[in-house]
Image (cartoon, rainbow, N blue to C red; front, side, top):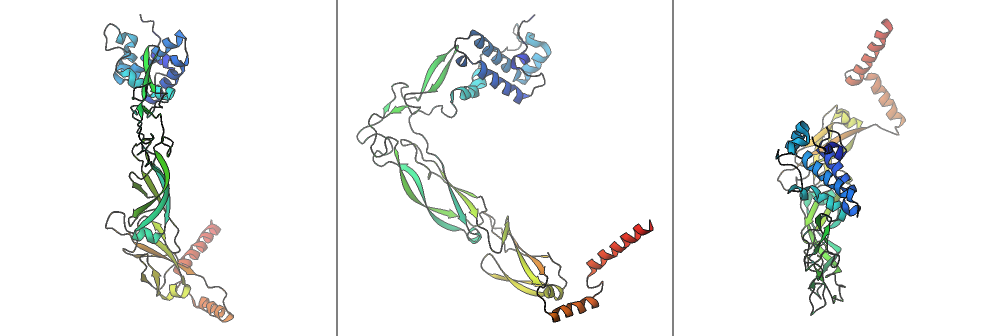
Length: 376
């Protein structure tokens, strides 16, 4: 009978734990019991091995099913490829190593050619510029390759030398208990090269700060939040490394007439009560700096929308165009003269349900409602 501890107990999880809970428990315990965090403690090394063995089984669906059915016996006497420090060990612990030793994103970086940082530039444009497109001229402070040393960081006439500690690899290996860890070289900080005589213009970084003028092409139809990428226009790389990218983030200024909804434009136009009642027409501006007429039929109600086809915004990188919607707001007269008040009062006396069917219908329902309640 096996005397091994239950794998679920080893990882301190329930038997119903899903993959994410298993991984979380594994990471937590592996970091806690790692030999490097417990130097000279033989117990931690044993626990570390037990944790890895348990996770190697339970993270594999087939092995977990066999373990749930037969227990440790499933992997004894050649019963199915038992756990251990095989090919899966490195993949199991790669993210743990990164958490413990800060190795994320640093593998194979030797040679000193670090990519430059990406830059962001915020630009505000008008709705008309978004409609037409434009070519904008901008100036940005940016690090560029040092001309004095051509980006090497070494003084003219000299060259960087391979790091004597790592031999130019940027990484060093070190035995840690029962396995070997690879770390960033502390001598060259992972660059693989050392500069004995740095360039006086850039202090050995291989780049200097400059103001750079750029031309940015903004296509018609861009929306608020559109991002334009200019490859290679970011920070210059360290010691001759490739440059990063520049990202232009666009924002649209508010407009005095229009509100944008995707490719469609909306505007609100106040009209008089007389125009709404008798009908008429009015002109509205369009985004292409033109004008268009809107005909208002008699009896137009507040909030009615009129669609003007193909007078909206162009759709980015297509031949489609949105529409323009005009919403009327019927304005109630203010500051009436006595004569105007008398005329409106006379109009009210002459009005009937036919002139205001919605109001008449509503108040009829109100009377019916209270009449029904009174009889109940």
